[in-house]
Image (cartoon, rainbow, N blue to C red; front, side, top):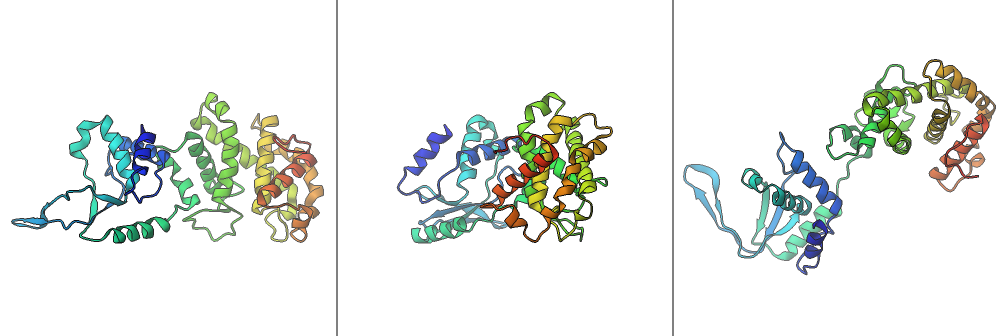
Length: 325
């Protein structure tokens, strides 16, 4: 039904608005259904009419009055998705119609060229949410997928827990620490989510977020503790690439591989994993900053992370899941 509604709008020759997103309409509809304490319409809708509207003030109420409606329909400059979602929400919840107020700004008596120019200015320069900020907000967003919330909680623990080797080393918005940052929160999240999403069925069967967020945090924490011992002076050393994003992401993939083989028991895990990773000591020279990109030549960061992952796993005798020969 949403697809048919959008197609009907987009076939209208007078519609200069951008292509509507079905997913965004569904997300906003879900927001309306879960918005209990906050105003249900997020943000002001901008409307346009070329007609001059009449305003009739109400006696004794400064600035309040009745605004006449145009004979033709308003054109929507901004707020297409919000109003489309509201239309479907009210189809299912007609009794709520009287309780919902839609904040609007109306431009009247202007040419359609003015409306088109306003539309272009607003929609050609969108302000995107910083990915790191979005990760921080997953916990509060009703429509966020549970495996994304799960991964964001693990990232949060890695940043804040006192026993985390990555404490305050993750570059996130609003971070107060002056310590050198090793990796962007979004990069770390992507790698963790890759692992969590692959294991999601197993995580659900094992008790879900309540028990498994601490479990996955513990595995990542113990892995990096073991890695820190193995890398020795190369750890947190600017002359080496060990704690740079490319290697941290590759090591996190090795962590997922090793956890699959030897995740339990948690007791004694740091020591066990230190022994498994011990061959990395022979790679310290290869991870010097000078010449690193030549030694791990690649077309880009994604390919290089894959190469480093395979080399680290091979050296430690760990099967690299999904690795190509």
